[in-house]
Length: 372
Image (tube, rainbow, N blue to C red; front, side, top):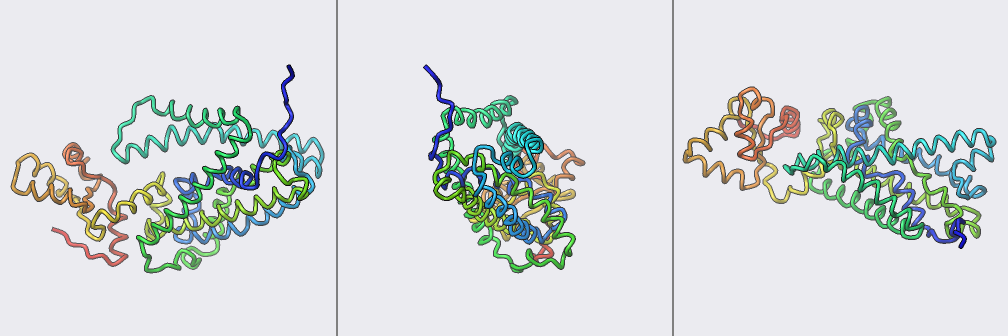
């Protein structure tokens, strides 16, 4: 019995190619945590930098489009370089692609399973077992491996479906955040005067990295439908569509994160480990809380929860009603450490964080601050 080792012809649809290209770019990873590099330079103009990177990427897609017209095969970038510079340069390119993919396969699951998900659980008060990261990493490596064993048809269908859902999620959640924020200066994120040309350009350079992987579908040239009838143009057309979808989603997400975080506080956005998570968690709860009313505890005021809960004062019922009402009640994270009140805040289930930048943003946005 002989094993069939040939590639399956005409099994990958056009939208399968688009889905593979989108999955190679992985836009959700950028929105969740990796936009901080561009924001460090572009600040409030981060959406403008992403828009510039989006438009610039059409040059690369144009290259893919014309190369695949003549070299649509399983070789991908290897076949492009081999035709232009010879087999030695192509061999180097092949090793570079393998090296990059190895880092991606190893690095992304480790980050998602070992860093991101545990941090997300902690921020929501969920305690995970110490071995969770091992199971998570094995899951994110094992599922793609099992799909690859199952064959090209089921794996590409899963990729196409998940990529479409990814774009729908990014666009839908971004529109929701924008509608909740209702920014008073809607065009400020597209104004370069605040950071200058250099800031926008540096932000654009880092924004381009969000589109790395756009050509990940090119090795499917021999398995794609219509490659021979369209002279390979279907590969290039899929790249154009995937770039359009991802570019629109990233620009919209960058805008939503900027106005959602606060256009005057983007420096703290750049320093945050996962600003996308912070913004995406903040606004879905907006309809359940009185967002225009916030209660901050700082200085000696962080002793109040402990004093109320320990002494069973008449104020305890009012304090419980405040927490149950949904009004954001936040304690400055530094004062409880100095005054030994961290346990009391945890018992009252109060959030503790650095509130200086937030208070500054509220003042800039015109909120009235009352202290007592």
